[in-house]
Image (cartoon, rainbow, N blue to C red; front, top):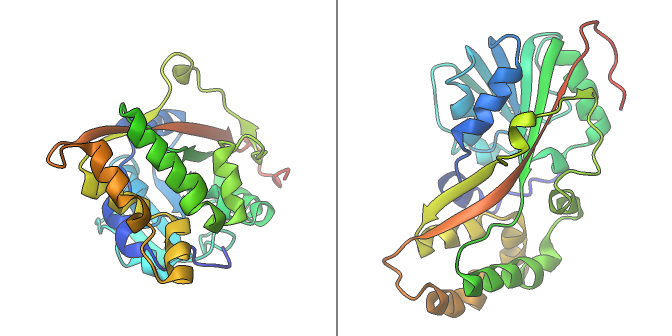
Length: 261
């Protein structure tokens, strides 16, 4: 990640990014042969790392953004380190799993997949996931959010962000992809019950929001704030907000070999 896309919004990221459901990590744990060491790549402020620390003996959590890591949550079995995705600094064949939460689109994929092949043990798991634009049960609110996403800050999204809109469908993983039958009838959903201020904090955590504010010396939320307040109706009430999660996992072969990327 040559650019720190979150330098301008890191203070919002740690506080307002949603927490992933426990079921997501259960699916990853069930796919792992061993639970000794996991590398959480592009950990941000450690939302996934903290959950992984309940499953694995040791978590190495890296991020290319020093600003992001300043807001990380400490745990006795988490080691936080500033490092790019393609140069983890980990020993070869040292991790049972690699996780990437909502960040694969920022990576130089070929170099990162080579690093995965180097540091994963045989039969190790690479698990990546992404979530799309959120929805509420309030259609007026949904319209405002889409307008903010596409029109207000839309021109400021880095080009790599299109991979999120594609739910990573165009990315070929480096090892044999695992089928996840548990998701056939029960997809993964990330959901939070949020106040309007929490939603605003989340919108400000977007990389595009940071680039808008830097380019225009203006808070982009100001453009939609009145509409948000009218749609919310009662600011003392919370709204159920949901994001669809796409989880993809692949397993390194038993015999150590170079990844096909």
